[in-house]
Length: 326
Image (tube, rainbow, N blue to C red):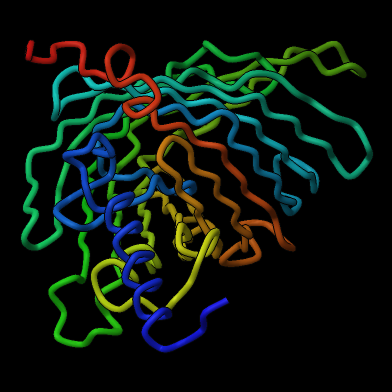
């Protein structure tokens, strides 16, 4: 086996070329997630800013929750599915739901399907030179479509702003593989309060409970370090498979009630992890760390298997519904 400097240089050049061919050539069909030379992977805990043809099946999460005034301590396990489809190159819709299982400290459990969530997203800005893009959209959690045990009876609408920015133009080479994506939205409940009734088993009296539904500010951020970008656009450091397909990242998903309740503290999680992206599929694994005691306790896990339908079915399911005929 030849280990001369010349052969190593040739091998590294070939490896960098192969990485560039796979990750930085949307003209060859690998178009999802690209702005110029920057590939943005599909993030797990926060919504990415792209309009795309994608399927997440499954997304699995588990996290322990603290005791509250309304419920005892519990562990929540969620298995979800999400499907996104382009209508045009810049306009798309999504649909998703999840099965939720909650096990309480007394070993009792409740489970069922969550409400169906529908979304529309429009990508209105894309600049390859600066590796940046912006989108707007709205999500609708359709009240009453889930099971009574875990689904909310009232609908919620969440208008959201999405953005992505790569640092490929940074003067410092070490900064160029970095990128950030994020979302800012406000969840708007259809009803300001929800009233539920139950019968006291001891007295037989009907008891009414009124729960106020606040507007909720929702913020998501994902800081990414792209090893494919490093090797194909900055400096080939000689990493082979599977490392040259990986994007380490840290996600932040937080929310804060804005009105109608007394406790307006932030809650949410920090999710460090890694994404592995191939041409047709992506796998992600993250830890789930509550930001404060009110958000939960201990470490959770978030994992996702994600399919890029535009590359799996480029001439059918992966094409925009209103694609122009070639």
